Length: 272
Image (tube, rainbow, N blue to C red; front, side, top):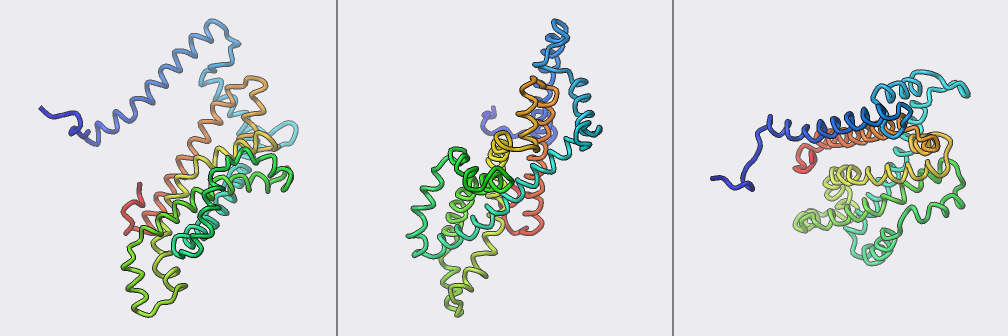
């Protein structure tokens, strides 16, 4: 008799048991929604899928009477722009700091304590400081995302750099390579797929900081819209927006994983 720990599902079984929890949650929601709406047709807590469809149709396919804009797509574009800028800044700084502190002991000795302290500061706690320093415009939102995930990326890449076998560095020096050549030709190429992995892992936090910043000080964006309509308990808008954010996060993760596999097929962990 096989032990449970040794049982592995077939691909078909894996797909079935992977989809099963989603189907069950969907059925539970439908039953609960029907029950609440039958008791009170004006109930807003668990809207029917038809109500959510009407709300998104209104937000995405009908121009706003006040601005003439398609709010759903304007919110999406604004949020994606902020997220992309924040992640790009964080990835650039994180790569530079992680590579240098991991490769150069002198820089490691001077920068690692500071990096550790910065990584312990809750980014949302300094949000008022960012608003004071950078104002309530786009820059403060982008900086919150960048400051929030840069320490994670930097520390991860620092560790990855230190994991590279020292034999490679010795061989490069034997062949006459100087410090900058070792960093650029030996270390950097091996860190690029690790950078993509670190960005993938930090995207969840990036979305959190984005939505928090938009909820507090913004006039558009997915986070702004969710917190705006909550005043009216508009769950028919909130739930589709949350589902849309989840879908976007999944697509970004998939795109980064695919990019890593295409650019760095030699990296074993590129697809995970």
